[in-house]
Length: 389
View 1 (cartoon, rainbow, N blue to C red):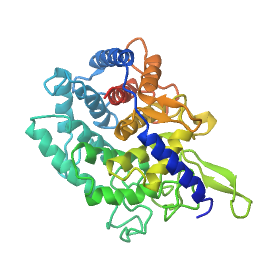
View 2: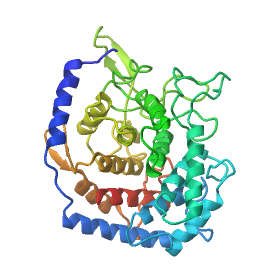
View 3: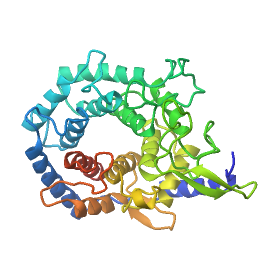
């Protein structure tokens, strides 16, 4: 693979092991209380915006409602008997389909995955347990493997779709939908040795700039980060990234070449998925992703995106970061400049500073629906829940 520098990876691995064994700091009382105040205001806001049918922003289906439910049910004082949660669960379950999916006609994988994560937080509800089992089986069937691809030929492990999940039945797979699928399988208790996890690791690795990438290793910047998808769309099998490409000098020839640039939210998505699949911490893919995080640490933008788009998907970035770093288990990140960053305290401060007077959040860089306060407030609830665990 071009650009692969064994010595650099060895150094980064040693640094990573040092970071892993370093003492961690607990979340301090000041930040815990600050987070609880933000959570209380957010829930009060969401109680005022729930629709009569129990949903929040139902245009894309039940997914946003399920994100809100996930955020609420992670509060120890809220359970399925809470009137707002109860109405929302009734709405989610009303969107069950005969094939086990949970959606309102569009974005089948996206909606089903997020609904499974929400329902996995419900105790002692047989209807929810039945929905989880059937939806889990549906998600595994939807994962690209063996079934005919857009050209009618079976998807084998050599195909760039293999192991990934997309928005719907015929959509090309991407890292966002795949990480939501992995999140759902993890939250619903599927064993990480299940073939669905193992297949997903093939797709996810192929979206990463590492030497282990057997498909796109020579077209992605080899910095350990991730691109969005292995293909541009279902008909164009060229790889895709939301951050575009960057020109660098070829290590062997010195001539400029254009490589796909990695970026923040999707790198955290890949990192989190590796952790849920229980990859070892010294696995070069985990090392690469973690060192990308150390080298690109920021709470100001979604790093790696072009300057004019760097605030797009910012709250999705925060949510995925919080879930990933909570799964990592250390409260500190030692960044590439040698500074120890208490990620939970810093993230709480950032989220608190962005909360509006009415308890909501929204992103002025309105892409991927981040202009919707219900969605972004749900994201922030999940951030704060993961930062205070």
